[in-house]
Image: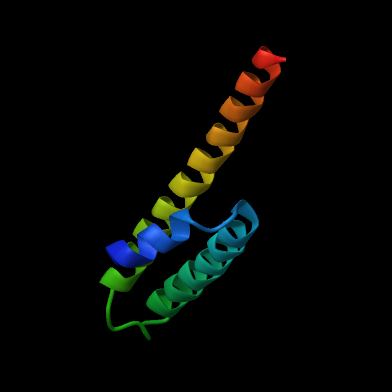
Length: 78
């Protein structure tokens, strides 16, 4: 994932990110199947997809924590 793509993903909402996570998990499982059947030429593609998945999961978790923090601060001020 390029830096520009990563910046754009940070701007998306949680539901879109969750959809992308689901897609990436399916792609990774398909790549692993291809590897096991000796169809896959580029073995690093699995590594790259897993790295992208980790970045998406990190952004999704950051958004969850930010929402929790905002609700806590909002509840404390009332």
